[in-house]
Image (tube, one colour):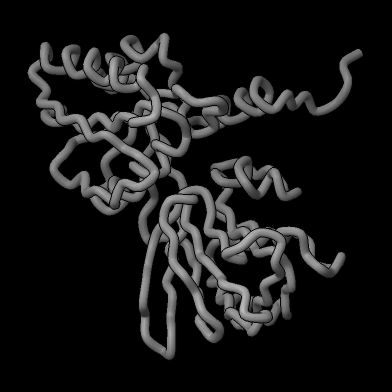
Length: 282
């Protein structure tokens, strides 16, 4: 399909992102592709990408997470140029953007699908908030080093009461993010599953669990010594919770489209960024 209009999502905190955004805009407009620039910050409200053929992100994985929420419903691909530290999602390096972008425009770069989470919050039986997330949904205490109490069930199967600093519900894409830092497993991003990972649980029996993404998680907020509880989606959307609220998490109906984010890019980032080797060499 011919590309006629593109949005470039730059990161306000990275000067090189703004400079590169202008260079890419010039490159595209010489090809008669209309281009808008959107400046993203962590306080940016969700933005609709409906009128565009694809989006280019210039930043780290956080910039991609923002764009994923806007691109999900309209099913337009994200071309992610990595200007951050890790680049598990942003698989295109900044020194190769021009060559890679031309290959994409020529239809010669792979576009992969990634599972996202759909989140609904219910209070007194009524839905009060909703969000989507590519990496993870975190329910935790609103202040550090405070326990929260959560009742968790999956497909109406009770998992019991979790007393912890919180719980992370991660996608395979998000398995290398906060969940990995909290001791969770690393999962191939092409799998469809959830990782339920408690944060500093009070009981040693509460361990990370990997579940099929075909099911539904229900997490209920239990009384916990007046500790404020917060839901965070991808670290960018925040929803305050209160005792008695229920959070329903399931696989989103649609998948986000990412350009050149294949398994070899993912495992290459594991090796180069996290120094993963799989074991000693002879």
